[in-house]
Length: 157
Image (cartoon, rainbow, N blue to C red; front, side, top):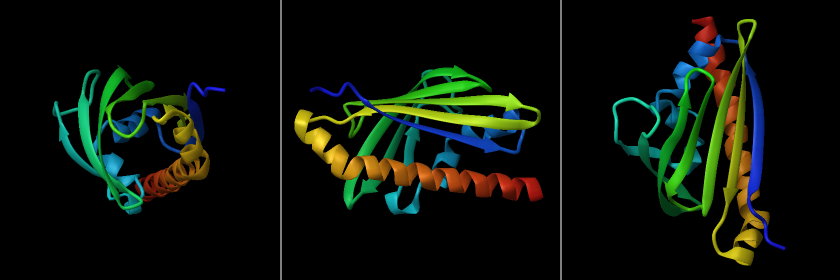
């Protein structure tokens, strides 16, 4: 049986207004701040000075010691409610990450929906079951915690 794609969905409440939360995510440099240090994630280049629809971002990271180069494109940009990034080149056969932001009485509900698929057919599905699914959970667990810490720091400032 063929798997079309895997889905990771995360939801997080942030006690800050939607405009402030979206502004944080609109700055590509903050992606390094919320990515686990064990990935050695670095932004190499962007084709524009600020993120908008059509922006391409090139990254480098190391996963289990293997260097990976990755390029994503912002496919949709609807500030301050949504943006979508898709992989143009990199380790996945499919990578489609929807970032949703909803305002609720001065707080923001942030939802990430990542649809992804590995290459290599059956072998890719085995690697997903053995390693990638757990890696994705760990990466987004770290991201959740780091976002909470960063916005609590801003609230206290």
